Length: 543
Image (cartoon, rainbow, N blue to C red; front, side):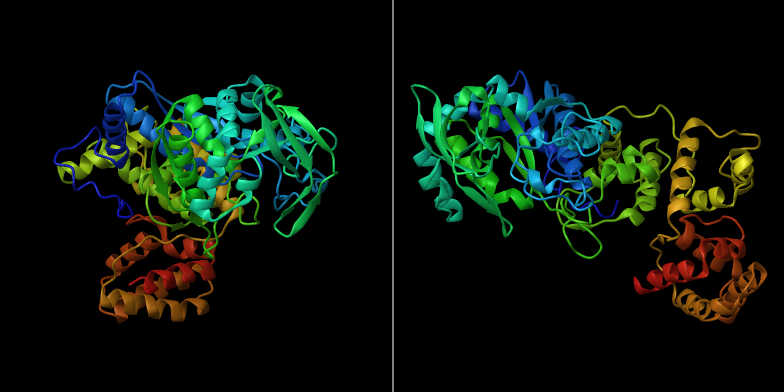
């Protein structure tokens, strides 16, 4: 867990389970008491996008707010997570991968009113939001779901909308002061759905009548990322009670915080401006102290670009869950709150192995100092949403299991793997593969079917080991069968004054995350000499 950088050293005693989430929960309680607000129910919130494929960063909102809710419950308070789905949002861009789905004509329309191009849900927005809800369910995250489309139709934000539109001048002034944008000093912070053409973002609301609840608007068009969505020119009025419109992002957060009584919400760095604006609007216009916040950085792909639901580098929770457990995905989200991280599919084996290390700490198989032990046990509990297993699972390094699934005869896969794991000491004699291990085999089957890449384990190398690996890399291309590869490894150790057993152990640890495993010659051939060489080169470069 060396990647965890959250500072908890300032605490004089351990709070709850000793994690950042426990400290945050206590801060929320202290703040709410100072504000004099009722703490019979403390709600946390996460935003649920519906305009594109949800990426793993989208799950981070839920995972972190859920952990704070769990921590609040553990401190003796009643808490629940609100999952607010913005399915009233308008489609601003056709996501990569759907360019031929006929969505271009729906730009500017609310996603809840766009047909599902996959034909399995009532709308495009429902399809996209269901993907993230499916991931939340598989991760064991409990939540109370709100659809923005229904929230507006049912009038849950009606009082807030009235207050914001009545004091729209103040809203516009706050936006101008915070981000130098003057738009909302001229128009209302509200989009009506055009009665004639059905567009959302093409309309401009210019007057609100509080006596009739009507907004007066004109459909004038909008430019989104250099592309003009023309308005139809229609000028009309819309009763806000019908729900045929929505607040802008620069005021909607504040409205739902007050309407749903939200007390904590984490947010990504990319919407920091919107959160700051909404904090002020919540205080100064709606007279509601905004929720406690925590800002986190974004996930990047290995090329350094932000992972995005509308770009071609989308990395969905569903992809992760093909190759790794829900708990390993939550570990990605919860082990570290601050700082930007680069992530891709090749990191999944590391998180699966790291979850095993956490489990060893949780079941007292690995001893650390008391404070660190408490914290890591806490992270493990949050990865399981407080529903931890009663006994430890069988831990087999991911790369080793991937190799065995690759080599196993398809008609007796489990028997073959069980026999090998008994030989390597991971299973006792005659011990069968249980449900947990069978699921791990399924993950590694998917992995070995789709990928060849080996994710090396970080190892501190001695000078002799570095020289031996360098020699091995030079001679490996010429070794064209498993016996020659085995001899090449043996000779590299001998020529650099290393005991062959120690060198083999080092290579096993780098390539498999374990000190022992199958004969390396057949392993190298099965995984590909080029892939193995790249993994060893990366291990050298990290020294």
